[in-house]
Amino acid sequence: MTVIAALYHFSTFEDPFSLKAPLLAVCNAADVMGTLLLAPEGINGTIAGSRMGIDTVLSHVRELPGCADLEWKESSANTALFSRMKVRIKREIVTMGQPNVNPIAGVGRYVKAADWNELIRSPDVAVIDTRNDFEVAIGTFDGAIDPVTRSFGDFPAWWEANKDRFSNKRIAMFCTGGIRCEKSTNYLIGQGVKDVYHLKGGILKYLEDVPKNESTWDGSCFVFDARVSVGHGLEEGPHILCYACRRPIMPDDCALLEYEEGVSCHQCKGETSQEDKGRFRERQKQIALSKSRSELHMIQATE
Image (tube, rainbow, N blue to C red):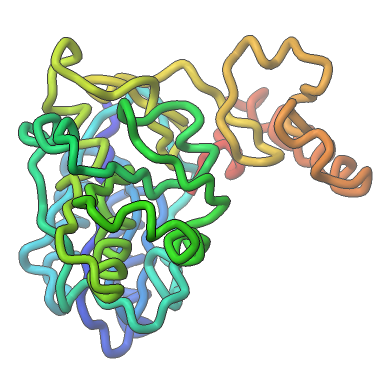
């Protein structure tokens, strides 16, 4: 059984480069795989491994500056999710591109999963999904507003264009695990919005804690690992990944004319050149070769 830990923590890392090698060494020694991002604002990522291995890495992360109270979300899988361990240095652990946004200085009011339904059913509350459009397409909360953004960095422009719609509303925001809402709620507070809330632990915590018969969630939740999507109880969902565009598709979509494994799907057929498709076909050959050797090719695990 593989243990999966999804984590993030905002903290001030004066020199994230100095943290990279020791963190990678601990992960490799513990046989833990996945991706962890380090930036001056903190750490973010998903890792998978044995119970002992995950505990070892989490212990190390809690010893990083300001990370003693680290929180994380766990789930499990029966198969390998990542082919290697990567620790990367980034400007931001989740890219919004707003230099004045600082979640350490303050965020919206946290709402526990058990209290989320009551909040979003209030008529004076506008519920906003802060995830990307392809994530929203496979599942979201009943009545949630989809900004139809291609990336998280598009959110501020969307808000500026639509803020007048919410002048008399309290704002409730949610995302996969909570990290994007740390920034989006801080951003709204900086824009003068007073009543801002966000789902503590994100969709993953809600799906873990709230029984299906009480849930206001409809569909599946996209996750950035080889499971592709999860549902209530964090059970693996039905989706597979188009390795050309990294969007989730259903197994039945493989029967469409636009689908070519590893090369295109109905969502991205017209988005790439013939040169791109040629590279994708070569990559798919390498994936097939890895499968024939019962190995996990690096492209088979998302970041």
